[in-house]
Amino acid sequence: MDRRAPPRSSLYRAHRLVARGAAPQGWTVSIHPPGGQPRAVLRNTVPAGLAILIEEAKHQVDRRLDGPEWQREP
Image (cartoon, rainbow, N blue to C red; front, side, top):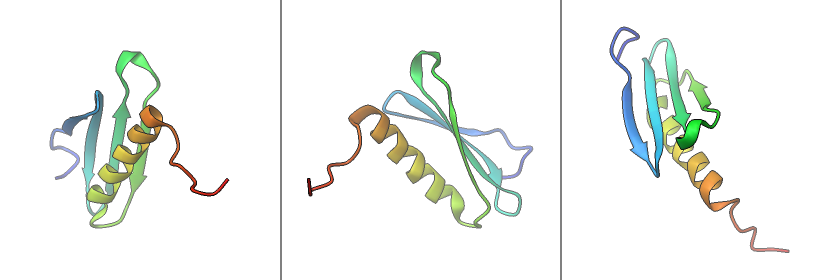
């Protein structure tokens, strides 16, 4: 996918994830929360980085909605 290609968009737990970019220039994934809240943007330049960024975006959405992970130790 190059910069001229339209961005890819998906919905995850009511948050829109928008992926842009290409391997040589780098990737960006924008997280658009519902209700007009501020968006977050993740970036990297790893050749296979799109999958990594999408997983990180999903983890951020999960943390926003569910809170931090349980630490298992007090």
